[in-house]
Amino acid sequence: LQYGMEHLPASKEYAPDLVDEVDGIAQGAGVAFEKAFFLNCFDEVSSYNPDLVNKAVHGCTAFGATGRATREGTTYVGQGWDMDEWYVPYLFRLLRPDGEPEALVLGHPSIIGGTGINSHGLAMVWNSLKPTDTRVGAPCTFVLRKALQQQSLGELVGAIINCPRANGMNFIAGASYGVVDVEVTATKYS
Image (cartoon, rainbow, N blue to C red; front, side, top):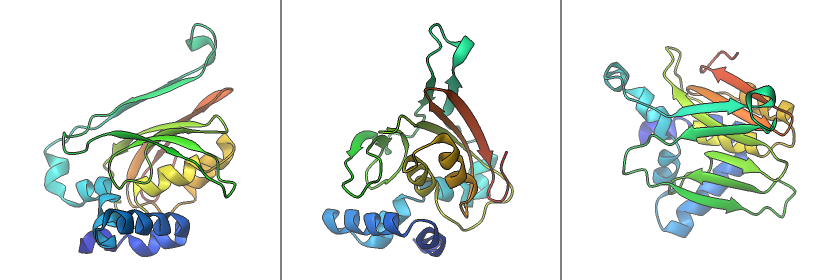
């Protein structure tokens, strides 16, 4: 819990609205905020222990295809949800009266962001990377959710690269007109 809470200041700076949402989830579930926030740091926790990385922990596979690579020129993004059985997947719909795009998101209990698609037609999938520059920063769930709050592919990429990231991730995002792949470490992006 202490390690998870070290990510809170960067999360408050990057997305204070999402910290408030985690607090609401905690209150609604009757659990301590620290525990609900810790669950949103699941990917960062798996990078915290070098033994886990050395054991070659597996992860998800993600893909994107568009244009001539698909039969009808349709854009596709997808991912295998290669999670342990205690990460029970669920689909949740975000209905936002405040102007944020609505979204359909795949996650697990208490998690505020995951694979999803928003009402502006932006779809996003991801897989974890284990870089050597892991640090304290905003957790992957915050990066995913902030990206799905955007209205264009360019804004989505900006939300990813302008984040004080804690970890490495590979994001594949698509819109009707194309796909981008953004690979990041905690301090670098490509």
